[in-house]
Image 1 (cartoon, rainbow, N blue to C red):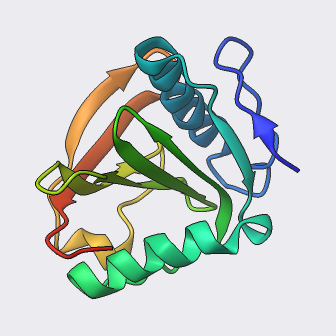
Image 2: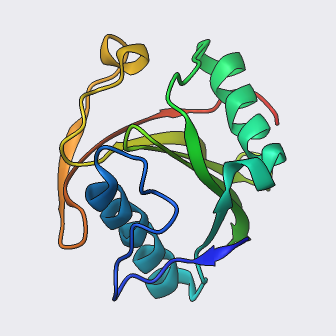
Length: 154
């Protein structure tokens, strides 16, 4: 069942099995606040099993672009379009968030972003391949993030 993420009253609903559930909930709320403030978009997530096409799309891009497979269990996903960008998010049990920003127009920006919840270790599959920058968030504490540009067509 879809869940509207509330960034004013942060909840771990759907994320309880994560060892960093509170931080992951803060990270998810941080994303919800961003999309509400910038695009007036309501950030709604679903259990990963209810929207396998979103997870399949993200996994395909990770695999084909960088030969990456995320080992953590996916908990929630969302997919939406705002301002000419097709967005997809996967929130993993480990505390990792992966987002795909795909500009619909030819030549538009296209990238995959990784954000690590406060308190989680860098996943083994990302550790030797990416450097992470730190960002402070009132909702999520210290977020570490990185990204890569998508070169293919999806």
